[in-house]
Amino acid sequence: MASLRLVLGDQLSRSLSALEDLDPGADRVLMVEVHEETTYVRHHPQKIILVLSAMRHFAGELEKRDIPVDYVRLDDPDNSGSFTGEVKRAVERHSPERLVTTWPGEWRVLEAMRGWEDELGIPVEIRPDTRFLSQPEDFAAWAEGRKSLRMEYFYREMRRRTGWLMDGDEPEGGQWNYDPENRKALPKGHQPPDRQRFQVDDTTRGVIELVKERFDGHFGDPEPFEWPVTRRQALMALRAFVANALANFGDYQDAMKQDGDFLYHSLLSTSLNIGLLEPREVAEATIEAYRAGDAPLAAVEGFVRQVLGWREYVRGLYWLKMPDYADGNFLRAQRKLPEFYWSGDTEMNCLRQAIGNTRRHAYAHHIQRLMVTGTFALLAGIRPKEVEEWYLIVYADAFEWVELPNVHGMALFADGGLLASKPYAASGSYIDRMSDYCSNCRYRVKDKTGPDACPFNYLYWDFLIRHEERLRGNPRLGMPYRNLDRMSVERKEQIVTDAERFLDSL
Ligand code: FAD
Ligand code: DLZ
Ligand code: SF4
Image (cartoon, rainbow, N blue to C red; front, side):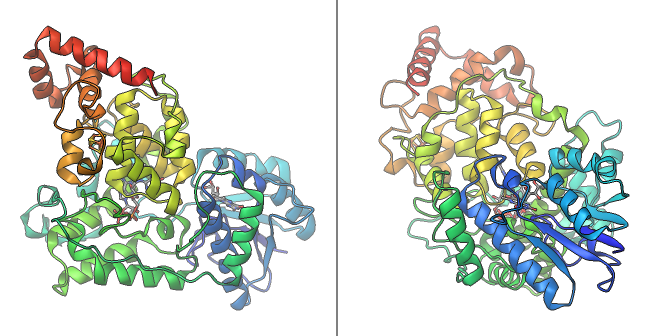
């Protein structure tokens, strides 16, 4: 055989670089379900179902096009359980001249791949992942010599490079960023559209049963399982988002609502991250809606910034800074992850809502991830590695290249400000402003201290007091520190006492 083309579970794109120049008469695709990937963390059952079902559908689609696929199932008795073991076995079966694959999404997998030439005794070609709109070396060139790596400037460069939402050399509408218009709470009684749901077919049903049997005890409900698992379904999800939600995406991007699991979010991250959709087509579909007058500029710019800006930026940062990036702990956070992150058993309604959403769908939207579970972990000083593992486990879209910078850098400020210019610390009033959670909570968001006060309130000030040495010099924290300076000694003592009492009870 000429070449063996390895396709991983998050590389399910017909345009994948490993599949370029494939000769169906001489080459073969290799796809492997392996124990190591299904268990390197105790993934939410829906994440395993998503990846395995999408892999099986993708293999079927390749075969329909007469591309030979060697597909190893998880329950194959000879399955060695790892990428390295399965690649070795496949090389023994097929004696290819070379192995071709695409740059993976996680450092640990790249490390394994780098040892394959020696182990297999054949050339191993690791091709760039051209589905992204920028490559790690582009990011490294952009970052070179810069004191700070703010996403906003990277994003502007990407806008210029793609020409998206540009008017010549200027941004469409005269502004690069319409975020200030994108921070509205949902009006009372407002009903966001329902999520597009996908029927479970026989392939997915088979995987659901396998996962229920093998991964019983993992956090999260396996069913109802409603994620797209084929390209056709993913395209339907994209069309549904553009038609039903995009126009309001900007306004309500930061909003949260009791039992509002999805609001106006696109729910496209799972499809993007496993390759059923490409970022280019997703962004272009939204820009087309703007040009057709179907969505306002602020909404479309807000969405494009997530896909062209944040998504590409976090990947660039990940590959620039790994493997050391994962080891930072700027704020020396050492507390254990509270049990309620798994059980949802807490009287804090905002956390109960975000964790419940996560358990039901392997999904929570950005502000729930950042300003509820993320901010709480930041304020409470939870050990970054434990928080990172939680996020990698519980979300169906979690792959380390995107999860780690978002948790370590954005939510926890564990990189000391490489990604974020200040910690995303906030008191309960932020959650109260952006949601209706507080009116359904046992705690009182207006109370600042005492047993009934919202814990976010005293934890916020306690956080600033605890980290004064590290954070007072941050120019973006000037105002809160000035407010802290105006507080009486007794008030500060009360804050510290309340915070200690609460944290000890976790
Ligand atoms: P929308 O709100 O509709 O956004 C559109 C798209 O923009 C998303 O599908 C996603 O591809 C992209 N996007 C938006 N924000 C980001 C971001 N900060 N970084 C990268 N891409 C972004 N995203 C993941 O894909 N996987 C993760 O494991 C992940 N972990 C996160 C952990 C934390 C603590 C935080 C704060 C954010 C995390 N994000 C992660 C980013 C973001 O929250 C999710 O991409 C988003 O919630 C997915 O839902 P959606 O498709 O409905 O997104
Ligand atoms: C997440 C995941 C799971 C659960 N299982 C598999 C698998 O059995 N086979 C596979 O090829 N990929 C799987 N994946 C996705 C991989 O973990 C992912 O490709 C690597 O982490 C690199 O990003
Ligand atoms: Fe969360 Fe505090 Fe509001 Fe309760 S009062 S929902 S703990 S922010």
